Length: 432
Image (tube, rainbow, N blue to C red; front, side, top):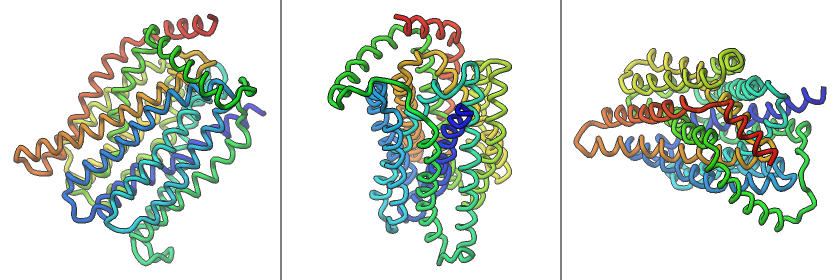
């Protein structure tokens, strides 16, 4: 019973922070940033600004991730770090509701800080899976977290979309006021539904007698040692490089999809409804992929999704209609939770469990460096094509097609990952 409570508390954090991923990162922030905070700017320029904001957040988290993970593994501090980052994200997200029209630098700055809180918290949330999930149940438990995230994030997003489409129903003067309130509501949701994790998830045993200074020093020493270990662990190294590439494409599509849709002339309401479709399709699909990973193996399932995303990035460059965008939303909803959940659970099986936070620090570091490359690649290609004299529409389409390169490279490298060899390497490392 206690283990069920622990799993519930852990999975509910995905329910809590997915409100930020859905309503802010993928939904309202790109729209509001382009139409309200960057009012009057060229669409390609505002896309480049948004890509830069995402990239800055990615760089900061990427630099901090392995260091924080190493420090957390040296003491009973995973939970403490998680809470600190989570509530940083809560406060910064709520503060977006106060930013005035045209003030895109402040909006971008708060978004960067909120994203750091979101991503930083996930380092330690992911690391808890090695202690929360029973042996041989990692795929299902990881998928459970993502599925609850889709459901919780989708429910709040549906409410926020309703408020923006019918602001007077909720007592708001206009759509802008409803969107600003949505940022505040996301912060409240995130804060409240983090409480089950606080109550039911216990910190794994560690050395809690060391002083903060000694723990930090030991953490840096451990980071150095682990970096040396990873360089000589072929399976983990190969997985991390492949993950870096393919998750870059996934994250970029999710973060920039709404901005891209607006750039090629699709209506805002259609884009928001497509995101809702993704969320509610993603809820059962993530659970389904948890079972699929157990049947055919996580690696085969991940490769299948990488191939699907390659075709999605190509098709997106040619879409023109609302129906096509909705179809892509369904495809992404069916596969997104699967590739995220199975990547996390596969990695958890090939790392030493006693160094989970630190190894997940490297995992998240590469994930965030990927988020640096993707948005900049997309924005850079768009600006280059426009500067060559082509239309903004063609520039936007070329930018989304460029993401396909990452799926090709990531898929090829991932096909060489040997899970059983990785488990043997992790076991040997834990014993020595």
